[in-house]
Length: 477
Picture: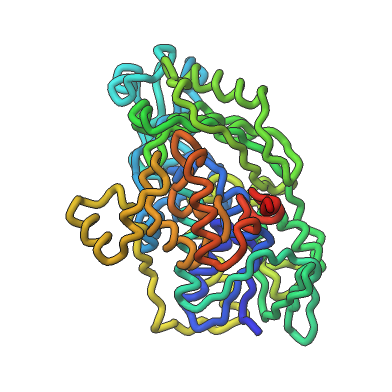
């Protein structure tokens, strides 16, 4: 029996789970995939938006600005990389410049600090590789970048360290309520019970709501395709570059990542819920937009392309953060499209303090520790620190991923710390093993062997990304 069941292990569910553990509550999170951060939280831009885009008075505007102010401290507590690099919305015409003034005024009303419209000369001084056709930009110094899956993993891990339970591979098949208690049953037959449910199921939020008896949540899906450039091109731009927004979103961007790569994308097309295919048309749209924004985009340094699918509210076109009108004790956090990543810590705080508190007493958990030790990547240590670490654990002296210089010790740690990495992609998201130029071409077999050894499962049962994605079908005789 839990006080609160969180459904959905993305950045929002993780933030809510962690916020709940600040109080003396029994908390669990159920996630249908084999790992957390498997939906939009593993494949988005990682942008911490300033907050000038959303119309004033909306949940998007409110929580974007609050979340932006919280993000630096939130990431620091969780040991997650964050950089406030600022953003630039590029203008290519007089009409674009007029729109920048509209965005600036909206941002001021939303509470965004430091906004200014700059001219061509100042823009080129800030970004030497920007297109010569750009005539100005809206500069937002409070914009930033963070790793979305790293933030999700750290928040859920911190919540688990503070006593919360995580159940992966738990896809809700039925939700019933009797005598004030919800029972959530998985297709496997496992079940959990709780007094409240917080629906953070992303693309599945409408389905979860319907299972519980609420047909009022309608969720759509948009696919966004990306191109990732090698860190060799990491200095190509210094800020996040946008074009002026459209009805479909903020458009294709060119941005550094916190790990030193350059990210191009995303597109924004209506999609089926589970479709994450990249397409020739999508890649062409990304490259054309990037070429319009910047001179001589180093596409020759492309190391991978990928796609993510994000949820949005069909009818409200805003974040849904409320208790169900149809089912008491069912709290929806749904339709969380951009700027959902930025808004996550603020949404979690509001959901717990304003919605959960109506049903449960919030007594402070005196044992709560919000600090999570950062993953000390071996390559970033000094020679003395490396030698000390190897002396304590020789596994840190064995390089497994040559591109990213990731050691066996780091992979072993990822397999055992909360939330444990159970497959190759889960290790990749925690350690960056396989994220370099060869994309796991050399290290993947070694990572699989370490997972098998550390978990005690046969090597042929180790998967790339869960479910049936096995690398080996059996052993030869």
